[in-house]
Length: 64
Image 1 (cartoon, rainbow, N blue to C red):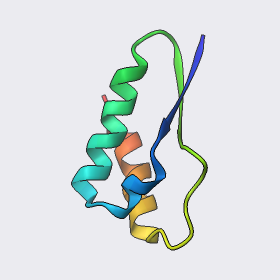
Image 2 (spheres, rainbow, N blue to C red; image 1 turned 120 degrees about the vertical axis):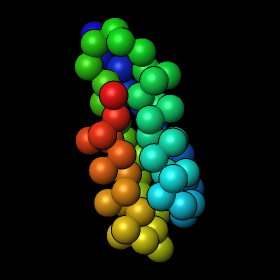
Image 3 (cartoon, one colour; image 1 turned 135 degrees about the vertical axis):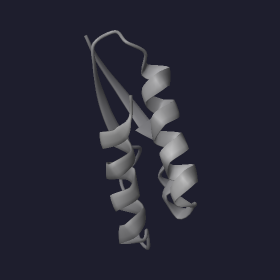
């Protein structure tokens, strides 16, 4: 079973710690029911810092 979970794109305007927590919480909320498709709801907003997108990806890679 596939679960798709969206992180609010405005989170990417927060701190790295806020981004990491939002990503990890989204993954926890998805549960352990199969594969989870993690994404940013409605896509990355114009003006989002590239470093924030990198923090999102790094947080996804380090989630447990």
